[in-house]
Length: 292
Ligand SMILES: NC(=O)c1ccc[n+]([C@@H]2O[C@H](COP(=O)([O-])OP(=O)(O)OC[C@H]3O[C@@H](n4cnc5c(N)ncnc54)[C@H](OP(=O)(O)O)[C@@H]3O)[C@@H](O)[C@H]2O)c1
Image (tube, rainbow, N blue to C red; front, side, top):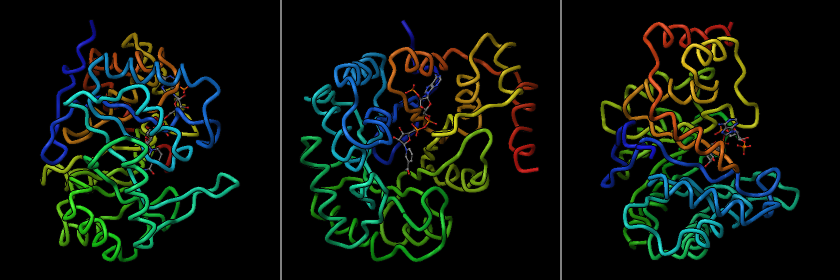
């Protein structure tokens, strides 16, 4: 039986989770819009994750919309006591599946209520404010008003802990003057390392860093270095990419997304994968060659 505890744990504020978690976005239909082709298969992935020991699931009511939260509820409710469901607000979907900002106080408040309803919860354990300045990359601009809205929802008991997504270091510092920030979820992987310095800063303050697109997202990672390290370590390139993230910093929590039980098992088996130091050094060169 796989023991994902081998990869360790890290605090998400006042809760401790295993570093190997699961991102539910891929369970929605094509383009993260509408229902999946096979809802029973999607529920099976969620049940397999929890049965394998995963206690950190990332979602949002804007996946689908509503679809992944409903699948999580249908597959896992009543939730295990140790399960931490992290959701995010700040966007809405257009009728054409586009991703639009939803940053007004009423939209943020409505989004919290939508997540509560679809997940069947009285309070959300962690809510990330998803900054929408630029869709995949953080861009500067004050987020104080939006963080104040979340802090007010926290005071009302609807939100237990607050995180940020797609945020700059300045926005994180601004938010931390208003409310305790327990995690940051930005794009980061072995080939895309814009947040290297930020990760160290957050580690010093015991704030979790949760990379989205850990496997490259909609453009899966491809690199001859990943492939050669995979051959050497009898792993797959995707497993090597995840193992590299686990080695990168102790505050990194993984939420790889998949709609397949076999990929889920492969991703969680990373708990058994050791990367030799010289393999890490060669993997470290990937981002430099992408930037060059
Ligand atoms: N905050 C944000 O703005 C934001 C943005 C994007 C995502 N997220 C969160 O981050 C999570 C992770 O991101 P992501 O799912 O977009 O990207 P990802 O984890 O980098 O990659 C997911 C893709 O990789 C494939 N995959 C997964 N495991 C694999 C394996 N072992 N071998 C081969 N292919 C594999 C999946 O396809 P299969 O389904 O076929 O396995 C899917 O196409 C999401 O689920 C979501 O919860 C947050």
